[in-house]
Length: 143
Image (cartoon, rainbow, N blue to C red):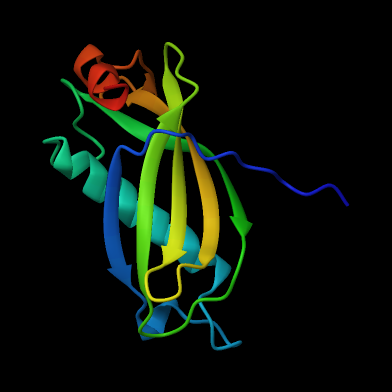
């Protein structure tokens, strides 16, 4: 079976720390695969807030973003109470979107927990159609 391979970009744009909560755990007692995606979403939201945006729906006029695809490579377990450091980077820009990468590491052990990527597409929520990346957003993400 072919494995997904993700290459985290060299330039980190944002770093945040999140603690594992009991509701992040699955029946195996470790962080569930679905919870990693939720942690990535939280990191993306915090990153956009750090750039001055209030949410993912208002990034320029009526333009927001949607996630068009997701890839996650799981590297090691994480458990209740772990503090995770999530680094965010961007790459592969085009007229309508870009890829956002997430490197998730255990703060205490330094072990890599997961690497993720979300394909991001800009959307005009009023017109309900794909839109061009607002220039200010593009500039901020490629700084």
